[in-house]
Length: 267
Ligand SMILES: C[S@@+](CC[C@H](N)C(=O)[O-])C[C@H]1O[C@@H](n2cnc3c(N)ncnc32)[C@H](O)[C@@H]1O
Image 1 (cartoon, rainbow, N blue to C red):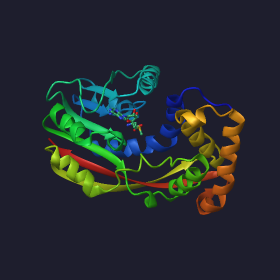
Image 2: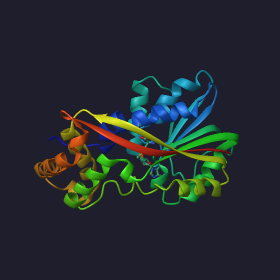
Image 3: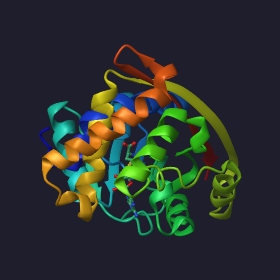
Image 4: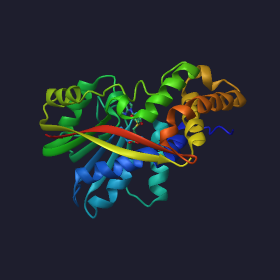
């Protein structure tokens, strides 16, 4: 197995391609962006939300992606350029946004809030940078049992890798908590909706290899393992996972039901 050097490229070419893009399309439809709007993609990662929304706000709108990770931003910039998309990409922390009060009409944060160490501070910042009447959409995964394939993978990988890959992504699964955080930051008309999609990975083996690669790339103890050992770990996880996810297999393809919460609120 060849290990890609750059986890941000793996994120874009695998996680975004199969998992985040379908959720982004749903999120953008709900956001109903209009021509001329100034849009912020908070915790933009490789910029999938910004890149999809860009077509909706032309001719006079603008789209800005902010992320703490320079590596993610480098991929965002490169992909946007290759796709002919004009956007601004800024490095920064959600808890201290480098923007003036009221700078945006619409702010989206897809699967980012759960990662922020200081969520109330980040949401106060989000509230500050929205214009009065502006709207925000914030998505965070619902509880892991609503994403049964991910839950099964998480159990097997946790035992074999020594860490649970879903622990942080699925750490803010309570809709009431999300609602409370937004209301606490001053947002009004807060509504949280559960959205379920079944995404499709063309190949279970690739799903396991890519996710193990992604984990191995960021965990120091695993990053130093020889590639053959990472590959052997992935094969072991796959063997153990197959019987558990058999109902979701379609040949070698994997159907993966997932559920997210989407909070919509106004400034
Ligand atoms: C699961 S990714 C989601 C990325 C993107 N929104 C998407 O839909 O593909 C979470 C992102 O949150 C970013 N992040 C984590 N903590 C952050 C912080 N304090 N400020 C800004 N971004 C942060 C990470 O760098 C990562 O790109």
